[in-house]
Length: 196
View 1 (tube, rainbow, N blue to C red):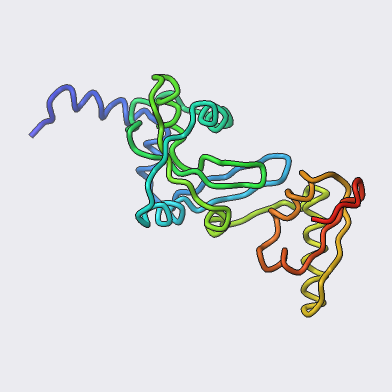
View 2: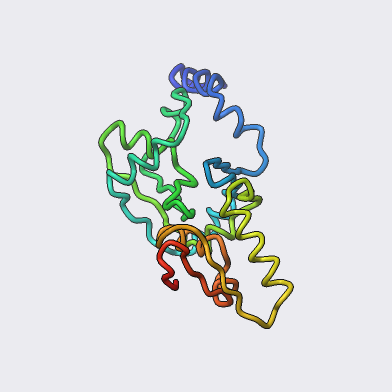
C-alpha cells in the first residue's frame, strides 16, 4: 500500500533533514556545551528520566527563552518536524539556566510568538546528567582542582581558600564544588576579604 501523496512529501522532506537523519541512526542523545568555562557533555536520556518524575512543566518567560535559544545553531530544515507544544528541559549551569532539550521547539515558539514550557532541573539533577566535563582550562577550574586535591589529602580538616574576585566569583567557585566539598571550605575574596 502506498502512502497518500501528502505523507510521501513529508517523508521526503524528513529524509533531507540532517537532524532527523542523525536521530534515525539511533544511539544515546547527548548535548555538548563549550564556553569560556570549559566544556560539558550531558546525557539527555538521563535528563528526560528525571523530568518525567511527575513534576509540572512551567512556562518559560519570553525574555529568558530568547537568551536560551540564542546560543543554539539551528538547522532550519528540522523546524517543521517538531511539536512546539511538547515541553523542553532546562538545567542549571554555573552561568545560569541551560536549555538541555527542546531548542528546536523553543525556536518555533519564539518565531511564532507562542508560549514555551519546560521542566526545570535543580543544579544537583543537572550535575547528575554530566557525562564529562572539562573546566580545567580556566584559572578557576585549576583552583577548584587544587582545592579538591587538598580536601582529599586532609579528609578531617576544613580548608581556607582565598580567591581573586568579588561575590560573583565566590558564588561561581562554590557552584563548581559538591555540597559536601562546600561544607569543608572557608571561602574568602582577596578583593573584599569577605567570608562566603
